[in-house]
Length: 196
Image (cartoon, rainbow, N blue to C red):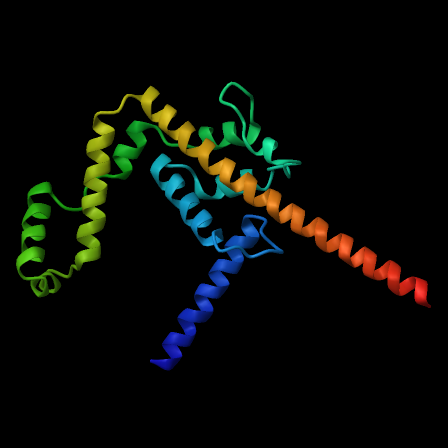
């Protein structure tokens, strides 16, 4: 058990470090970084955006010069934002991706079993996580069934605009930390160089 606990600790640490690098967060580790990454995954899942292409687009994100540069009004052109929107799946594609693994009647019966006798789920080779995932998928399918393509695009745009704003604010703080570190280093080098 100790070895397994050590493995997961190392795995999670490396996982966070790799994704921080993917997001360009190299110097300062902030408390909200984990939430920023998690919210990115949620936006990608909700919009059906391509994982790899989204990270590639973020690598093209210029550093904002000020907090004002972090927000792009809806009427303005934003290349990264537009690219992210182009990576979102259509209503039809998402409905296909969210095809049920369980028939709705079977899911309802399994929910009842889980409520009354959770151990019996193991007899079916299932656990609560599977039921929760299928329930979320069913709810999302139902939501999409009543959604016009225009409404999905509007929701996708709102989700990406909000996430990119938070990301740009975080990248701005990263840039400021790098600049501060460089100034300290230069000041330390100038002070040390003058003494010799």
